[in-house]
Figure 1 (tube, rainbow over the protein chains, first blue to last red):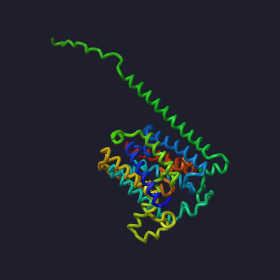
Figure 2: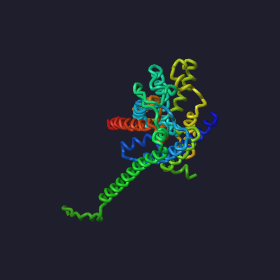
Figure 3: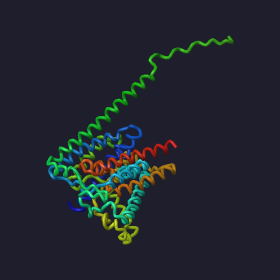
Figure 4: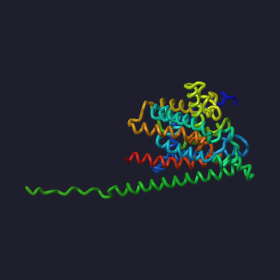
Length: 220
Length: 163
């Protein structure tokens, strides 16, 4: 596909995502934060459903050699970076998606978060230019490099190549695990709703309130 | 139109996004945001710094500023789609944080997100909508990191709310 074609496809995809996220109030930050802080799973369930669909689809296409999976080495930096990101998204109250969507709703705070995300990226580029870590794509080998705290590259394709089993088989196992998490959440929600109903019923008076007793004024 | 009057069930919205993401995966690559934001940072820095930016190796070796980088347009599309949705549903209005503490938290949060994305080479979107469904080892490392980070962030947030 030509560069212009790629950009047009990306823009159409982004526009549909922006519209759907705006109308559904989905938030990736809330999907994790609300589950931890408030035991509320509205966004978590949506995230899990998307991940189940994507796992089955991506691994199916990887099995037959189709699609464009991401290919780069991962390592300690992957976990450390997302750890910092996780703290940041809760403090900012938005992630990479909701900053753009909230900015589109006229939220100045989201635009401010976006501005400082850019500044954070620029600051990191300065640090990287001194220590050259983590390795740039051009120097990635796909193999573990423990000195550079890199674990190399591994995905459904490498599993298929190593074990000779179609990638989709591994994908179905992952989808099942995600589904079990989803089901556990649904059960927890049902239990919460039942508990809520019980508490409500207990608080409701079962007999009509007694008529106030006639108070005889002692002065009469 | 009903679509712009009622809030859409996020499960339906995310299922639809997942289907669209499958097409994107087949055509160019799975949904990601961090890469496009980095390229925008480079383009903005190039605008202000000109050729002086070439003296920073990161912008020669990792991200060479380029308007033709498709990931930029996902972000611009999300902004456009959100504006359309907000305007048509009457939910577009200028709002801003009222307290100075909120501005400080957003500033620190934004910086941490930017640094974290570049340190990891991935963002939360590629973690959940790309790497993990591709069963990439990075997806599992990233999920462990983001959940631990969100937990620490929640503790800080709770402390501030209570304090």
